[in-house]
Length: 190
Image 1 (cartoon, rainbow, N blue to C red):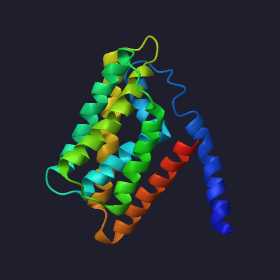
Image 2: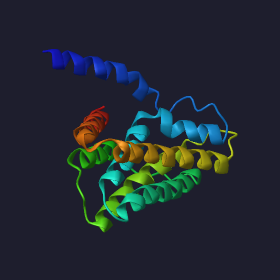
Image 3: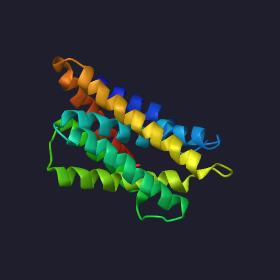
Image 4: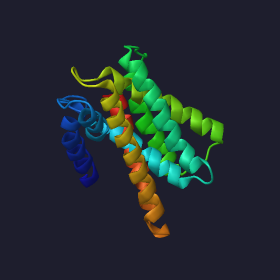
């Protein structure tokens, strides 16, 4: 009974953040680009989860996953600036929160080509969303620089969290992945 009340309260608490996740980008250029990934719950969770997941990997995947995400997102942003729309974009973004959350929760190591393909696909949806929401009177290049810097910073924060925590905290990272996955499922159902 207590868990149900807690989850309900948490859902109510997060609802306004989701409703306004993409509104209010009144800033110009770089500031708007910085704000979009940080203040959109869906973008924030997906980008942190990419960093968490990258830190759980070994070898080249540790840097290739975040780099692929940033590069693909930038490509998607350029497509969005050109007015290109992709079907089910918001669904893809919510699915990315679910998928990256599950990948962190189970600490899975997929084959590199699968990991990069999945990361690139989801990053493209995030990028197109960023590009389509370019504020009027904002410089597209400043805006792009802002969302690239914010995304890379969020990846680095997730990565650093895993790498700097003691090994005993591994269950907490997996729990964070599970929470992101649940939030992704909730976003898909909304």
